[in-house]
Every structure is written in C-alpha cells, then in structure tokens.
Length: 398
Image: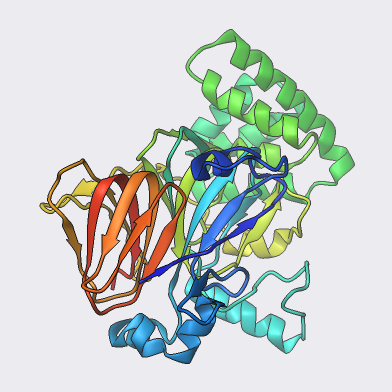
C-alpha cells in the first residue's frame, strides 16, 4: 500500500480554488483543473518505497504481476487499466466525444503509419484505447450530456426567435432522428466561422434574455448563455444547444460511453475512466478540432442523460454500476465508531479521501488520508477502512 503524490494539470478551464480548498492549501491564482491518480504516462502518480520517489508506471512496469495481479494482466495487459481524477471546472471544457475500442485502435494505427508525432497538437489518437468515463459530483456540477430528441431541440431553438436558426428547426422537425441530428450538427460545425458567428451571438443574447424571464427552460438557456460568454461566436455554442443540460447534485453521477457528445461546464467531481487520452473535439476550445473525424465517431441518437445514484451493498459500499470492465467506482461514507470495512484485494485499487479523515490498514501498516489524498493498494493483503470520512474507491470491475 502506497501513498500517492499526484500531479495537478493546469488547463485553462480549471477552477483556481476548488482543488486547493479540498486539499486545504492556499490557491496559487493559476487554474488547477485536474489531479491525476494512476499510471498514465502523461502524469503518473509517484510513490516512495524507501529509495526515493518513483513513478507508479515504473513500479508497475518492473513487476506487473505483483502490482496488478494475474487477473488484471490477463484481461488488460501489464498496465493499470483505469485513471482516477479530481476534476475542477471553472469554465466549460471542450465539446467532445470519445471513440470506441475498435475506432481507437484503427485511428491510432493510422496516425502511426502516417508518422504523426504522438505529442503533436493535431494528433487525434494518443493511444489505442477507448475512453469511457464516469463523473461523480462532489459539489453541484453542471454539464452537457447526449443529444436531445430532435423535437425538443427544435422547441429550444425556435424559442430563441432567431431567424437564422429556422432552417435548423425545420430539419429537426421534418427528418428522422439520426439524419436530423447529423444534418444539423454537420451544418453548424462545417459553416464558415464569419458566417455563423453572428448567428451564435444573436442566439446567445436571446438565451440570456429568456433565462432572465424564467420559465420551464430558463436553466437550459442560462447554461447556453454562460457557454457563449466564455466562447463568443463559437459554433460549439449552437452544437451545445442540441444536447441535454444536466445539473448533478453531490453524489450523483453521469456515465459517458463511446460516441456520446458531452462537455463539463462547472463544478468539482471525481472522474474515473479507462486509461486513455483519446478526445475528439468540435468546439468550445482553442485545442485541435477535427470535424470530419468527430462526425464519423459521434453516435447520432437521442438519449436520456441517465443521472446515476449509487447502489448500496450490505457492507456499506455504494457502487456506481457501469457496463465497463476496466473500472468500477464506489464510495464509502464512514461514521465514527462504525465497524471496519474490509476491502477485497483481488485487483489493484486506488482509494481517494474527499472528506474527513480515513485510515487504511493492512496487517503491516496504516496510512491516514485527509481530503484530496489518495493511496494505491496492489492485490494481496486485504485493506481495512475506518474513520470519519468519505472515501472513493477505484478498482477493476472485470
């Protein structure tokens, strides 16, 4: 069992205060967007087993069976198959989708054949893995997730009373679901920027006005207006209006599978994903955008966002069920004096404290975790969890 030293990623959209407040440290004034926990080569955690700090990735590479276990290696190879993060959005992230496993493998192989440098800003596929992910709110958390039904999207756009949007409204009302969503998103993202920027600005102004007036869609319009404030004239603002706006309350979660368009807007959450960095973006970002490739990956189907709540097991572990083998997220809310919680030790796990003080014990050692601190436990000796705390547990599901 090892305490993790983790890297903060200072992406521009990050909150300047949320992660420092959780850690109990002074803000630096710079954005602190994500705290990575795991062995991803982009920012692996570090551990110290007596010879000085070393990356968790190097430790796993040196003895994968001891650190991961035979079952994990058999299923996913000699690498930790998940990445755990604290994510703190102070402004909207890019509007994006992730490929499925086959698409990622094919896209990665293609860019390798074309000798696209892996660190090139225009590269789409950094690795050959898919990137399903789960976000669980620690604070009220705003996001966009999945397409609205075309008729619902048409109602929202029509309510803005912007003449330039009428062709999109007509398509959404007259065409079958898949073709309607595909045609409108393609038109929005393929338009010349100078031609659509004015439409975006008029739509944003109308959304701000309607949000102030109240009504059943006021929260939706307010969210779209806020996005436009951060990205004026960006066609991604209109693309966002095709998606569900969702506000998660603490403890609620969203699962994002392959091809589902989404964006996180504001708030602090625990994010767990397959160990990948493959992202295809279509707006709300200064980063690389590849519209044709994104349109090839997007699943053009309307779906409810599916807000999740954990299911409690008899031992008090609250599990967020997902259809993914690479990871499993659960939560313990511990009360003082409660019976110790033994944690199965068949697969590797990362334990993250988000409130209170937690104690992790094995037959040979004890670690104390405070908010924002985390530990890695390889398979082997069982870990016992006690304390007055909230602890998230990332493990392998398979």
